[in-house]
Length: 263
Image (tube, rainbow, N blue to C red):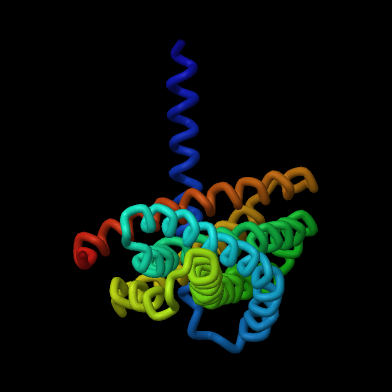
């Protein structure tokens, strides 16, 4: 019976040590951000790669999502005689919650898995150790550009999700449910504030940073075998998702307490 508590305690200590190492690598990566010349071209390459692998999935997620929300909310609002409020429900939901979370999950799933496998392959081939022997810090050279690339592309994807989701909701709400275009956009703009957009972009930036950091950390500390790289990819995706949802809950709660939504 005593083995179970000790095992749980050991697992908890291991999780705390891993979390500390994760944030230590993140701080180390941000510490040399000013030295752009060392990582600029890697940043450009990673940005192009992330944009290439995440843009189409973002469109495929946002368009049907906006249309589904518009159909469901529009049907309920029609029964209450407030169908013109559908646009507000769709756009506000996209801006405040859906856009940053969707962009982060796509970054973590499509781009983060590739980052983890790349860093894991470098690890098992001893490339990271070779860089340290040559007095090149692998965190500064590899992790820093990936974190900034993921954060920038995540902000762009959040904007893309908002636009495409609003278009999807507009098409279905106006064409299928008979709401006028003016009522759709009036309901959307009447509930939004400028601070909502800034908070959304800030969350998207932070979530992209977290996804890239977790992916790089898992790849750099994976078991030195092909199977270990595969397990690291799985762990990186799961941990990134969990951290994104936790940080989203905290940020949203603080924002709503500081700036209560308008009625």
